[in-house]
Amino acid sequence: MSVNSISEVKQLIPDSVGLSNINEESKAPGISFGEYLNSALMKVTDLENNSDQLKEDFALGKTDNIPEVLLAGEKASVALQFTMQIRNKILDAYSEIMRMQI
Image (cartoon, rainbow, N blue to C red; front, side, top):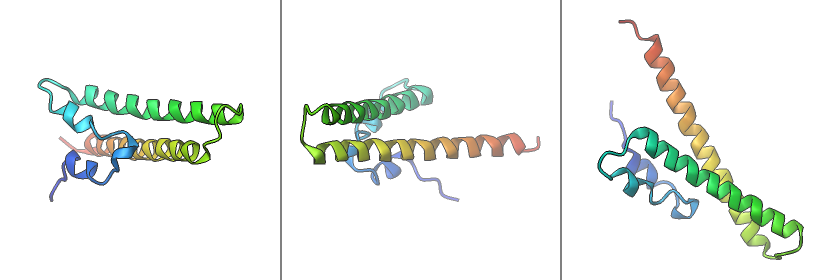
């Protein structure tokens, strides 16, 4: 059974999602999986905050750039969906490990 690396999965994600430099951060010596995961979650949070700010600015009439607002919302949505799928896979792996008989 072949296991694909994160770099192969990263190639499927467009750079505009905001997760493009996570792989470079993970190459730093001594970075743990928890730090890597925390970095990814912070980037998703930043995308969501940016989307919320643009939506608020649009609602208040501070901006009229509808495509920018929609694009920011989609970026945040895709990043959140990707994060949720990773979480689901981690929980599935944990459940599988806990079911193993020693």
